[in-house]
Image (cartoon, rainbow, N blue to C red):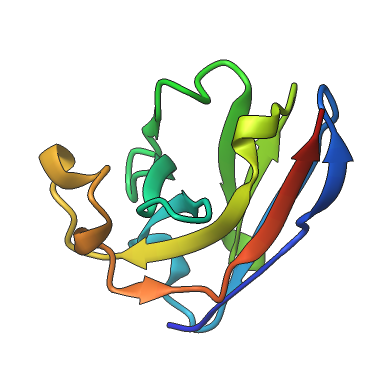
Length: 125
């Protein structure tokens, strides 16, 4: 699976952005999809995921209520709608895919086998 993320940019605090991640292949629906982010000098951190099959969604506490993950299996695309952006949301955002991720590790980047190249989000105050 190859992943291509896009949609990042420079916005002001309070603005919204929608990130997209297009996956290659014909088995997109069989993958759990996730978004992670990495700020300068920090480790890569979990943002959100949507589990394959039942479509359950999971969020980091820091983005809960502001970000929404969704997917369109017909378009092989996963989205991250980001509202009420804050300067602390500034990071490089990565989409990821994994097939055999158990629920207890869904927030762990090590469970995801495929990664996109990242798209930069910068939020000014």
